[in-house]
Length: 480
Length: 100
Image 1 (cartoon, rainbow over the protein chains, first blue to last red):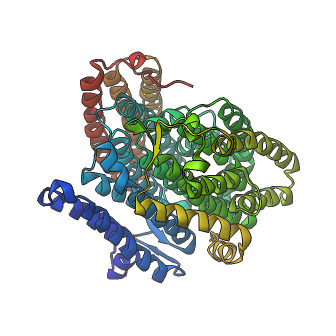
Image 2: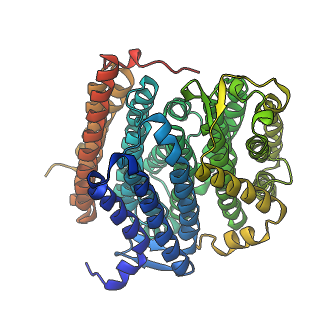
């Protein structure tokens, strides 16, 4: 075991975020109850510093801590997405927590801990760090999902997420233990080398691979491991839902990619068919079940399941273009989903959240800008140009066609057309229905800023995607 | 010396008991115990492989798993207590406000 000071520099962003999270827990009792907002800005400062550190480390490629942790542009790209997602979540939370009467300081600490866990995940180069990062990201989310602890729905979401989340961690861990037994190492790079050399005769490899797919499948919510998603999305406080669907999904896909494409690339022929099957079922079921939802958070949950299906296509392709398209997809998905949840947060129906699709009735007449922002996000989620959602889908489909999966693209496009029905239904309700007097609109300045940034980003990437694509292309995962 | 396959078969049995427990039991605390069984099945594997391969990584992994499992149980029990306060029940069948 050797340890050098440069190792500290490589994990500086994680250290900053974790230290600020601990500091928030420590200073929280000394801050008067009505000024808890200060802690939010504390959290933003942590993310800002970590952002700065990551930008400075962006193009370094360094394996530290005895190969446990890898600092590379691929991980850094995902970290930048995570910082943006976490910062937007905190800004959206400020007004929301006060309205719901849950403005406790721990909230911001848990958001930072979860962000730190995801950062460890995207930089993990050993199955130990993969597992630790995954748990550090999941455990704060179990708590955050139940943060409205006087509300039955929120508690139920928390309990369901906890049971299914730790169940999937157990399955994943058993798969990891089998991989360790088969190869004698937990290092991803060493695993890849092990698989490159020899013929795979042992069926235990297949079992380990299936267990890993189940474990990661739970985390990214692909059918048939998606049952937790709609309930948790509906019950959890909306900013938590937004961060869960954006951050957790991006980080899980990053680690999914690292483990399968990099470490298990040698047995690609074995997992490819299984993932194609999962992608097909996910795209079909996610889009079809979303059609009948009346609650917008539930609808967005099924939409996020469907989007996970599209993103899995990038993973199946697994070449350079496939990886770039997955990275672009996750970046774009972050902006449009955060934006959509941001609008949902602003509606109130008699003292509680207005999270039914019917509550959007006549929003265009009540608040033209909010309705327009929602219109942009819904168009983008459908994949209509000139929004970023189109660029993201376009690249995924292009990668799949290049890899000879044309039939899969045809199926995905057909179900994208199906998805237009439930996305555009929200637009129709906003613009063509009479306003409902019982639904009020609140608009704290922080939330308005987030919506403006998200809408601008979606439009900008949609119209002028060059710089964003270049960033993803330069940061693509390097195979060793 | 006990052969490696005995340990792997034991861990598979423990793991299956855990999975079946999560799927068929209705009390959340029993489900929590079943999840612990799953984690410990993996631990048996790690230690057995570590000894068989003469490689220390597996034993290091076990320490991390134990720590994580402890943290998970703490959060899980807290959630169960909160649930019990809200609903006066810890049976999963009664936790069903949301359905598709």
